[in-house]
Length: 532
Image (cartoon, rainbow, N blue to C red; front, side, top):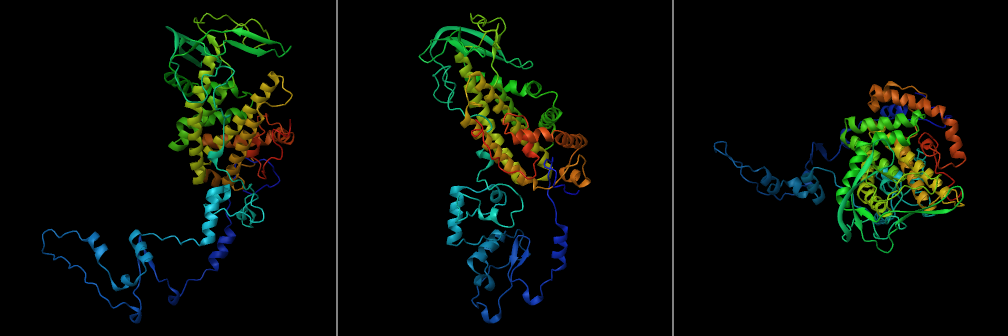
């Protein structure tokens, strides 16, 4: 398939092969003569070392163990003993390193000199860039510009146009970092450690049902009345969008009775209602988004490769957990804990509904962060890094789907913080600038490794696939149809993608996703702080 370098957005790059260089190399190769033969000849995992010349041989002989007679009924096993005690003249003269090599059956590594040791120590201390890490080589910094690109990225061999970014996939963040639950709800928890409440106002236990109005997903909680402490909020407070007036709605002093046991309920909901969350948060009129999420959802249960199946499932779990933190809950069912519906603000989303007590909201935030988001973030990081490091063509589709979901997740979080800035009537366009800059930089880390794996070549670029592409990626008919359709959609959406990037619309759904298809991708010039 011919490369079309003029097209700025392409779907799936693959590796390219320089066959002419291979033919020239083969034609210029000359076999060595007998006089230039190697001194060591490899046989499987052992090496045979020819004896030295007679004048150079060590005439010291070592008596070997006697060979057992064939008439003995059970001759002893002498293989391991012989390897330790039998010493031939040529082996006695061999260096210790060669003898160690013969025992282990592998080539020893050459000792580093002082300069190499210093460079290796510097790489371990300061980190390796993406290119050097993927090539498993020493990342040597430029002595004239230590903070700039490394020597390998500056060399002529650096064909792939990716930034010299000294970060790893485990350095990326996928959700906003939290040190403690929201302090305006309660100050009972200074960290994200799960600590149970041990002082209660009553022994009465009730069942409270909460919903976010996302399909049939709901949380069933066992709650108990608490003794309010300083820092516990007993009211829901907000500012009117239209007038700026501050409202206060009274709630009840209740909390979750057993947080550790309750933590299993949200995780079950996440597994059971992934498709409901996709239908709720993904625009149903956007076929590229819908088809990509549904393909990831299907492969999370049907992929033949277990590590890819688990990775997709964990990414979707993490995506759902992030969405749950951006949409408020309300009380449903008969049990209302004596609270009244909110009737103060007609323009508020929960008008006529019963709000959740703030302490319960803080507990759910803690459980979501400590027992769901953090463990699954760690799993996704390690699993994605391992899959990318393998550089297997048949795993490309899984890597693409994971990157797509994580980048779209960042767009949704950015849109959430823009909406929050409006609700708080801030002068800035976005709320929590530092958090967003960390999330956006994490996207750059993911894109750096993604474009390195793709190598900048073309595949499915014009909406059709070659037989080589299908064979390399090991696609079935459903996956092939999905990629062909996606290529056409990317081409159709190219104007809106280009506009989102040129105008730095970080909250646009395709601002980050469009960078997957840019073969000339570079780090963005503008950040969320520069557009305030």
